[in-house]
Image 1: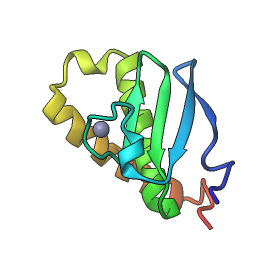
Image 2 (image 1 turned 180 degrees about the vertical axis):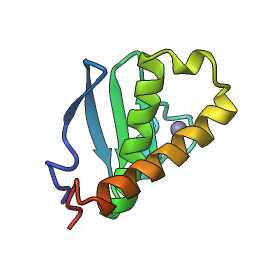
Image 3 (image 1 turned 90 degrees about the vertical axis):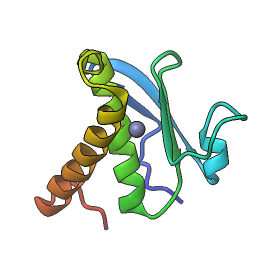
Length: 110
Ligand SMILES: [Zn+2]
C-alpha cells in the first residue's frame, strides 16, 4: 500500500495541477498501450503523472524525476536543453534531490 502523504493523488507543478496515478505494472505506466514499459511518465497535455509502484525510495526517485520534467517544461528549460541531455540531467537532479530530502530528514522515508 502506498503512503498517500509521500505519494499524493494530486500535485501542483509551477501552479499547474497534475493528477498522479500509480500502477502495479510497468506496462500500464505508459498511457500509450503500444509504447514501451516505463517506470514513470508525465503528460503536459493531460496534466497527468504516471508512476510504477515499487519500494519507496526508488518510487520517490521516479516521482521526483517526473516532477523535474514538469518544472523544466513549465519553466521553458526544455527549450534550450536537448531531449537526450534533458533526460540525463533530469535523472541526476532527481537522485540529487532524493539524497538532499533524505540526508537532511526533510522527508521521512520510513
Ligand atoms: Zn524522464
